[in-house]
Image 1: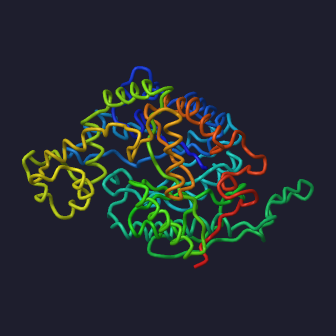
Image 2: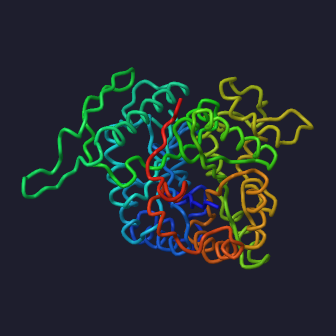
Image 3: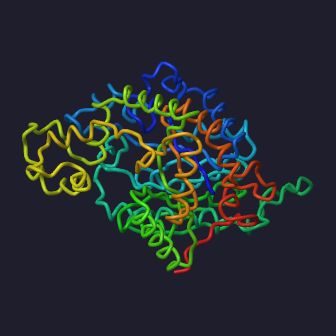
Length: 448
């Protein structure tokens, strides 16, 4: 199976409050090259496919109409730019892949193409791009003065990716780089072509600035959940991230994703995103789960939920009926309502209490792999067999210690079962070949 480790360059990746744990160095380590170099070495020693660095382009300010809660509780802030971590981590590894989040709403395709070509050169073909269209609520620092509607963001993303791929694939022919010292000829200019594009979003008439890198196009990742996002992933992405809630619905979703990709003449790898707490034995796993619950930040969880949903729970009294929330925001809370008790009319206080309490880990939970290595491996095998996924995008709780537990406890069990490699094949030097097999270095465009 495929296995990525998903984290962020922030003090408390994905699990609000855990930066406070006295034995986890991520609160300071997230801004240290030594920290990321050690993480990369550990993952490569365990034959993990890729280190995936998620990112957010702004600071949450929905809860209590303020940035203060996000800053106070280290909710997606402060942060550093993860792209700069990758060359340092690549320098101490030979096989581990890397992926980084980059927004098509807040950047331009020409600069993006140059950046990812650079990273592909510096990693020797081990880079991927997680394509996001970005939440407009955090756009105030980007200079974007007119917010884009959801579908407009995907229209821009379609153009953005198409233009970037043309820069990577079509601007420089094979053999354009000559490097003939005797004749003072570095590039055969006749084999380098300007990419011309004029549309609502972009006007470009230039060649790509960087010579072709090992993959040319980075491996393209996407995690769109809306119908428009799924179509975008099917047409453009190579690896699709999903967060599945059950085996039955998960199999349906995976099948739908693959069928839509096939309609564009393309093949996708599908990875299930999940948290992880693994212990040496049952008592150790339970002790770590208790620590997770103890250190979780209730205000931090509320701040993140409000930032994601756009609903400021701090603006309502506890006894406000849920139905009093403006209709444009109700869509964001409906998926939570089915999990709340329905014996009476639900209130904002019910919702606030629900989102502020982390779910208690258990062996059969939906969003967390939990237990001993044997128990977690059993659960992973079940996900693979019953949903048809290709692997996992795992976020260990307690960032530094969690990665160590993954590498020292869980991965040896997965290798023992033949679910993970014990060494990297020599014939898969690039990240794309890792996903699609030897010889598959070039991006496969939509045939429709």
